[in-house]
Length: 124
Image 1: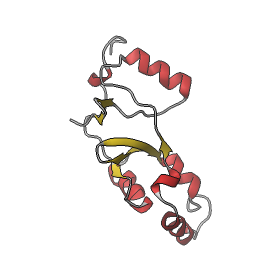
Image 2: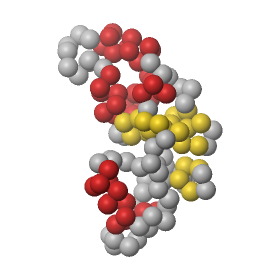
Image 3: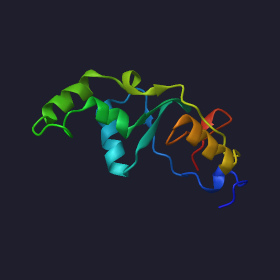
Image 4: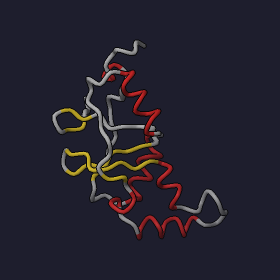
């Protein structure tokens, strides 16, 4: 991998997303089904947020206390995607070079960034 290569050479090409009107249960199911850690939230074709597996883990008790799955389900039903997601996430374009992306990850402590070209999530 060359530092001056564009991220289009290494980025995920088949991006899994959810709609802002979906429920948090769908977010959890989608994260599990696709074994992913971050999921962009869309309004139409616009990226309006992002939710990470860590965001969901902060809301739920199941991982901490045995027999609390019902509490987790209640929390997922009470809250909306908009209440949990990081709004207006930083984005990068597919022609951003790998070195610049690495610097963003290191400086901002991000673990994922949506790739957006011409205002739309880059999905091939």
